[in-house]
Length: 404
Image (cartoon, rainbow, N blue to C red; front, side, top):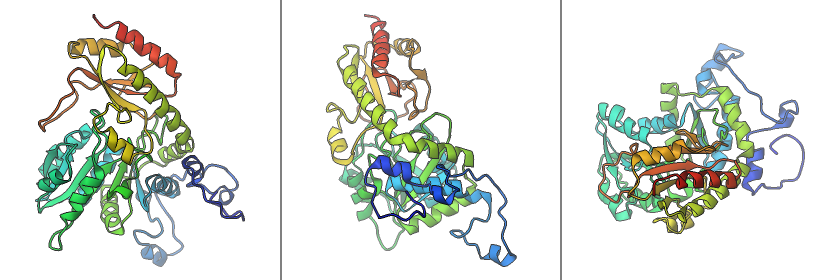
């Protein structure tokens, strides 16, 4: 535990132990187990000179820089990601937007996977395009040579998302990183590799695989209770930290202290929840593969997944979000009837909480790069903490109701 109590140094190797202990120091907080929630805008100083001397990485001068509660959560996120510094932002989308804005300017080029989170596409096609920044959407399963061919002299950002949040393609992040790093030249700024690592959480260590900036929607498993909107940006290099911190400050993208407190509370049980939900999700995914109504199950931990070998190589576990594709003779109306008839699954767009969710993805996926399509109407499942037998029975009844 991180506090002033004298004891021998016993390193915490287990993820669950680190999540319980990181970001709190009870003996420095009157013995209370949880860190206090610091809400505030104005910060007082003992003198004008002391306030003037406070720099961007020094004492907090105003609430838009966050506060001790934000710092506790940032320390925990950096621990999860294997980074050195983290920022806490108001949403997962803000955590994508801020580093993109930090590294891109008019005349630059960025690469975005064709499987990217929908709001990332809206950001690229809207604000970034309006500011004179060009985006190329690329095949998410691009190899090292293919990525090298996509890079331009003015490419400044390569966004990655592995797996894609609707179609679940895994990206070969080390191959992408090798291509991007090999293209660096003394006469131009290097491109930064940004990764949305929300699915990987701690099962994928981005900085060990060449990523420059890791992004997470803390709304998901870190919060864990469907009651916060938060995002994080984590780095290992000071050269990446400075522009991101400056963009964060300029945009005023600070999160609320109460949301940070809720995320810290969720963090303490995340390892246990993630373990239980990941196992239940894989159990249900395997069962769904046996159903005749199902064409494919899109789960990277299944041997049937096209990039399963990448999952085995790069990931240490799985979360509980995956996709299901019905046989092609079913209609979109059949898909909606299946989802609407489920009892234990809410219909909603988020995931990572304690509750199970179902979401129709057919009709909501934008793809512009030619390639293989899913082959039938599709939906996404998030498996919560309900009894897996109850969830399986609910899905079985729904599949049984489909027309024969």
